[in-house]
Amino acid sequence: MANEGTLDAMVARLSADLRPVRRLPSPPLRAAAWIGAALAMAVGLCFFCDLPALRERLAAAPDMWIAVAGSTATAVLAALAAFELSVPGRSARWALLPMPTLLMWISASGLGCLRTWGMPSPSPMGPVGEAGHCLTHIVMLSLPLMALMMVMVRRACPLRPNLTALVSGLAIAAASATLLNFDHPFDASATDLLAHLVAVLLVIGANQVIARRAIADPLRR
Image (tube, rainbow, N blue to C red; front, side, top):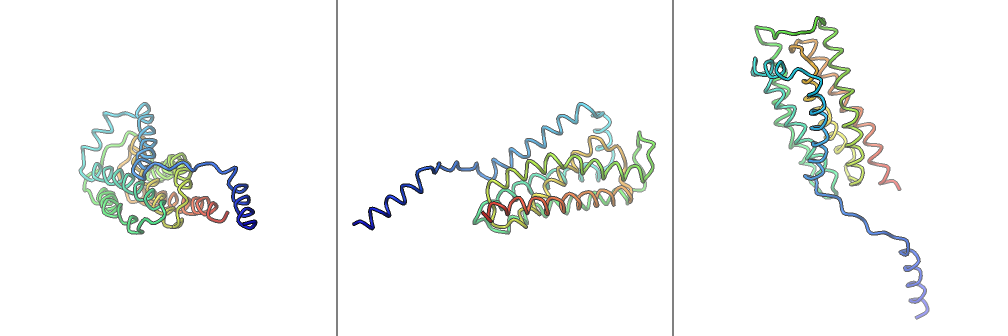
């Protein structure tokens, strides 16, 4: 009886300062919140871009709006997959969810190089200037999205930090590529496409390194 009393007292002391854990919203709701933040950025960019010119350019060639639709869908599906993967017990097959739209995005982006006509550009930049513009803007647009994704995913304490970071990086890169269209009035040349690819891979790689460490920290404590 004395031992039982001592054990009960010890349990009472250890649990005295514990607070109830708030349950996280479901992965679809968290994905919707992150996508809402990206949408808010798009609304903000609308005030600084020529929307009629943007609509005209997207309607002028099928590959342009298909590429935008592909990057947008990839951002949505990859965000949902990342938040699903952040929940312990979820199947790793969630990582396959954005693959069809990723192929659509990549294929349509490459079609711009195969067109026999070029799209009019209001900018006098050459290929190198266009590539630098693309690279810089995708990286800059990704920073707030990366910070928000890192905070939201880290709270769930995923058991697959590498895979979760990879898929969340894809969501960030795809969303940034979509937002780039508001301030990137250039046709898809080979140089521009290469810069686009480098920027996307850079965002995914940076997120993989930074987010993996941030996600893994709670697991070590």
